[in-house]
Image (cartoon, rainbow, N blue to C red; front, side, top):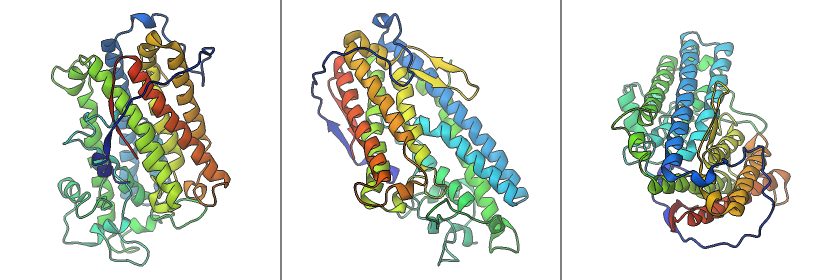
Length: 401
């Protein structure tokens, strides 16, 4: 669903104390053991490490997006099947990093405060005909309106203008240009590189220009986020966040709980499962929705465990939400850790193409795989609420489906 839907569907989730039986504290999913000095971990330590983790993840995303930009420039300079394939490859690679950053949303941080760029970066679903020609509408879209000047300011102004599905910018606009409409039951879109070749397709020059400009705008927005979380800055968001103590921890838990139930389980999986409509698929042009689910679930696990595997292979590890909870309720901390790990595994079980997984009766294997993921994410959101309660946060404002 469009990102702006979330802004109007934020509800206060009532917290209830849950009773958990004691059980062996076995670590699930290869997760690192809680810090030996978990008792000494405090909220400022957790907030400070979170700032380090967020900055690292956004930096990796920006660098991957710059690789995408280089591939896009190579493609638009010399359109061919080979340069198009490389651009698609780099888009998929960059999404692996961006998907994990979704855990940093939903609490009014730099990505989605009133002036945040989230809607410009990752809004969906997209009405393709708002941007370019589609099957049966050869002259549709901004590309084919030669009176419309293509630049970053104008594309930003057009994004969601006149309707939430009028997406003009971001990952999914780039995705549509690279893959085109998904008209296949068994694979992604298959746009020809000739759509970008003068003389082969109308307005090919504007299509090349649009793709370059929209990619540049994505780089600008990601750069803003990296700066907002940069270390050693006196007045950026991170400088305030790391001193926020319990309030910053509350925001972290709001992000995880909201992504778990309202966004990932709800808008990205449950809506499509119920409608069985490809138009409700997150990355519908590239058939990358199954990886969106995995990276979103992994982003939640990253924050809970205080860990993140960087692009260079280095693993960041530090004071975590789990450590805070373990100091108060070790059994609950372990239960939540195992549930979050189970959600990652369940998401990994969803097969591509996602638009085939959602089809059929309730007993269809694909639908069961998606439902298993929804159920796990729903339970983990309840566990996160209980975890918040255990460390003295008595209510959370979470996005609900």
